[in-house]
Structure formats: structure tokens, C-alpha cells
Image (cartoon, rainbow over all chains, first blue to last red; front, side, top):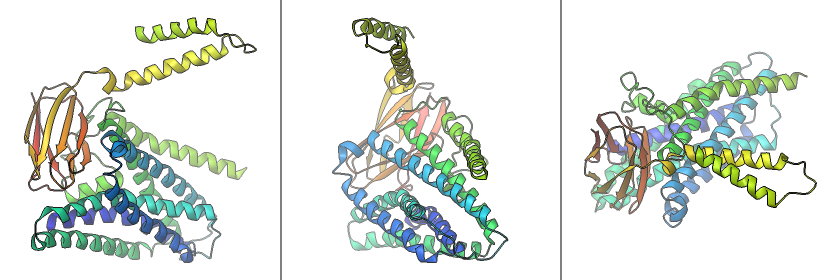
Amino acid sequence: MLGTFIITWRETIEAALIVGILLTFLEKIGQSRQFRFVYWGAFWAVIASLAFAGLSDYMSVFFQDIGQDIFEASILFLATAVLTHMVIWMHHNAREIKGDLQKQAEQAISNNQLWALAMLAFIGVFREGVETVLFLWGLFFQGGGFESMAPPLAGGLLGIGLGVLMTWLFFKGFGHLNLRPFFRVSGIILLFMAAGMLSSGFGKLVTVGLVPPLIEPIWNTSWLLSERSFIGSLVAGIFGYRSSPSLVQAIVYLLYFPITVIWLRRQQHDLAQ
Amino acid sequence: MNFLKNQIDEIEIHSHFNPSPGDRPGTADRRRRFLVALVSAVLMLIPGLSVADDEVHVVIKDHQFLPAEVRVKANTRIKLILRNDDATAEEFESFSLNREKVVRPGRSITIYISPLKPGSYEFFGDFHPDSAKGMVIAE
């Protein structure tokens, strides 16, 4: 029971973090009315996770083995692109805000941006959702009777509940930050998440031999922070931390930041002109 | 690299039979040659196509790895083929090998493991970490 509890708890926190940032962001710019876009994205992600976990057995040729990794890598690369777009947009938005108001007067938000928000919520939840569904699904088949099946299943559902609750409380506290610190902190969190997803995507391609690892591992920091510890597993899930990464993963992780900053600067420059 | 050069030569020969009218001589050729060289270079970088790997097979049964101790040659790239005979999904995970991959019930997956220094490397099933434990021993 404890095992299933911890797994779903972790996955839920990872997914809820993105949803939480999006909701808080909308609230801060006075667009609480648009929460539904985020909820839509999250809702369809749950449906898609159920469908994907259930149906992928029948789409075996495409989603088996290498197809599975290519698909996951594509999702991760797409997530990196959408997250980066989001951070850049939030950054520009924050620059337009004058003064550290607790709550900003309503700001215009285009339909395109709303769909980007919905898509980000979708990706954030779908990414963790497939794994969680597969895992919980397995519990149904595992133990024979209801008595042996109920505790792990209850643990799993409890984990999801607590994950949502914790993230909600976190944003309750976080939400009291003023606008500028909120943009800064959430922007940095999202950038690290994006770098982690990019690097994990390359990791998937290395696993099936489509991308050379170059050198693997290039270092081992498990003595400092092991993925076995709870903190380590969270940092791994959210920021893509790996204690024994391949060189190619480390390169894309580290290159992501300067490239994004240069892109950001260039856009600011364009706007200024 | 010889193989690369041969391909470029071949394209050069072919292009004599098909001179594209109106095009500046050589431009399209050069572009095509560059493309072929690029594709070849990328293909050579894909280890799966150029390196012979040692294959090892592991089966998941009753949420356990069989064999739980996988002996492999050190400093050789390993192709690990993992078959799941259980009715539930499992996730192969190893922090020291930097690998993580779901294997659905009744399916097989392939995991490439980079050349290892002699030593032992733990792995486990993330969905059943209490029973599914194993170790790759490189020697």
C-alpha cells in the first residue's frame, strides 16, 4: 500500500505543479474566468491517458519498443517547446506590469495563448497520466480477490488525493507572493522543467540506440543526491535530475539555458525597436 | 569514411547522365552531395547500425527478474531484451545505468546499455520495487 501511495503521490505532484502554475498565473493577471482552459487540458489529458494505456496494446506495432520511446521523446520535445514559449510570454507579460501589485487589473489574453495554456496543462498531466494509469491498471489484475487488491489501490488513490492537496496548499502559500517574484520563481521552475524534459527526451532516444550517448556516465552524483531518496525522485521527476547522465543529456540540459536566454533577449530587442 | 567517399563518387557519376538543364552547373550536385554526406555521417553516428552488441535476455515473471543477476562483458555495449510474462505492466529502472522504460504485459522491450566499467549495477521494477530487483554484473 505504501509503495503504490508513494508512486502516485510523486506522479501527481509532478503533474499538478504545472497546472498550479498555470492557474495561479491566470489568477494573477485577473483572468480567473479562463481557468476552464486549464481544466479542459487537464481533463482531456486524463481521458487520453486512460485511452492510451488501454488502447496502446492494440496499436502494438507503433507503440511497442522503439515506437514507444520515439513517441515519448516527441511528447517531451513538444513539452519543452510549449513550456519555453510560455516562459517567454510570461516574461514579457511581467515586464509590462507596473509596480508590485498583489493582483493585477485584468489583462488582455489572446485565444492563442489560452490554447497554449490548455495544451500545456494537457501535456503536463498526460505525461504522468499514462504511467499512473498503467500502474493502477496493473493493480486490478494483480491480486486475486478484492481484499488483496483494495489496499494498494486505496494507497494509489490516496496518493493522487494527497498530491493534489499538497500542490494546492503550496500554491495557496506561493500565491501570496507579489506578481514579480511569482513570475520570476515560476519562470525559473518552468525553465528547469523544460531543460529536464529536453534532456529526458534525449535519454529516451539513447535508450533505444537512436542517439549516441557520447560518454556514459560522465559523472556520478548519487553520493550527493540519489534518485532513491524521496527528494531525489522528486527532483528527477520535476527537473530531470539524473545522478549518472550521459554526455549528450548533460550537453542539451546545459545548452538549453543560454539558447533560451539569447532568444529571450533577441525578442526583447525586437520589441524595443 | 571510405564508404562515404564511394557514395559521393557514385552520385557524381550519376549526375553526368542527368544534367539538369538551366541549373548552374554543380550547384544542385554540391547540395545533393552535401546532403548525402550529412545523412551518412548521421547514420554512422547511430550506434545500433554500426556496432555489434552483446545480447542478453531477461524475463519478468511473478514480479521478479529472471535471471536476477545478469552477467555481461565490461566495456562492451549491451543490448538487453526484456520480456514481461506477467499480466501487469512493469517499469525497468536503473539509476546507475541511467535507464527507465515501461514494458507492457506480454511484451518485449529493447534497452541499450552503454559500455560499463567492471562492477555491479542495480536495477529494479519501479511498479513492484519490493520483489523485482536485479543486478547487471560487468566483468
